[in-house]
Image (cartoon, rainbow, N blue to C red; front, top):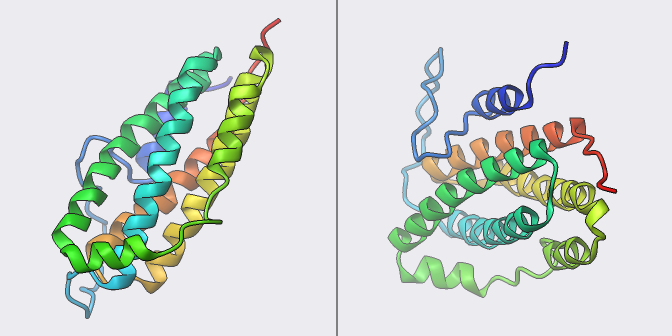
Length: 192
C-alpha cells in the first residue's frame, strides 16, 4: 500500500534535517568534533551565501509560477513545502551576509553568477508549457534547479570555513537531494 504523499514529504524533509520554520536541526546522536576554524564568514562563505541567495530567489520564482500553473495536489504540496523552507533559508542567508560586513558582501557581489543556473530558461519553459503539461514541466525544471543547489552546497561543505555556513550547506544538500528524489516518484496525471 502506498504511503500518503504528505506523510512521505514530511518524512523526507525531516530526514534531511530541514525545518522550514527557522528551527535548528536536531542534535546528532554522537557528538561531532568541534571545527578548528572560527565562525567568522570568510570570502568563500560570503560567496556561497551570495550564490545561494540568488539561487534561492530563483527557486522561489519557479515555485510561484508553479503555484499559478500546477494542478496535481501532490506537486502543489511539494512546492508549497519548498517555498516555506527556502523563504526561511533566504532570510537566514541574507542576515548572515549583512553580518559579514560590507567588504564580504561586496566581494561576493562582484562574482559573476552567469552559468550557475538555467532558471531563466526553465521559467520560460514553465510559462510556455501547455496547461496539460505544467505539472510535469515544473517537476523537470525544479528538479534540475535543486540538483544545482545540492552541488553548490556540497562544494561549500568541503571548502567553507564558517561552521554555521557549512552546517547550512549540509542541510541544503540533504534537503535538495531529498526533494529531487521525491520529485522522481511523482507522476502527475496530465489534465485533459
